Length: 227
Ligand code: CA
Image (tube, rainbow, N blue to C red; front, top):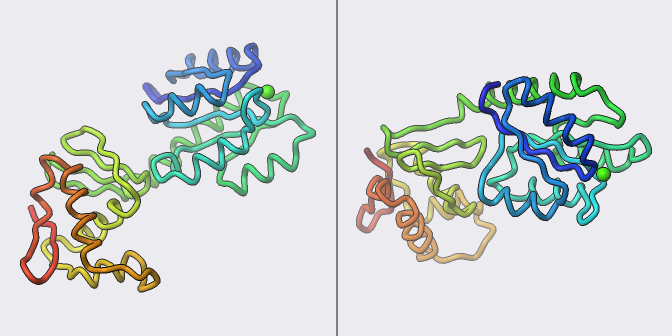
């Protein structure tokens, strides 16, 4: 597990240090947060491989953090292990329902926690490999994590932009009409005009920078992605 990063969100310093110590011994990089707020701000800058989240924090409710992470495409696939006290059973269940991957009840064995961390990260790695699509060194899309990289640099797309890219990549070289794209995006549920697609594609191309040229406009027909 060398080089994998784990964020620990726990206001009880001794517990946090203990977890961090054990993780570092196993080759993990750790970052500790005593406040939910600091964690959320840091998350916007760098995505970890896993988060250990205490549910009882002074400034924020761990459940709210869990809910927030699972509602954002960029953070959705970061595995979460929640830490709870024995009497927080409802929170624990709620956490799991919200998409946390596992939980540990305090007091706990640090060794057991590390085993769980390793297992979850392994599971995610296996799931991810088949979910990658690459176009040379130019573009890399991770459909599991909703991540897009242009020349190894992360690009942040909105959900709609990401979905359009996914549609175009599903059949490289195939021309998708605007109507078809709209239909695949919203299944005819939204009253939108064809022009909407052009607007999203324009933004998408801009964000993709150098890789933007891969998306081609076929006059009067629609769009395609081609190497
Ligand atoms: Ca706490």
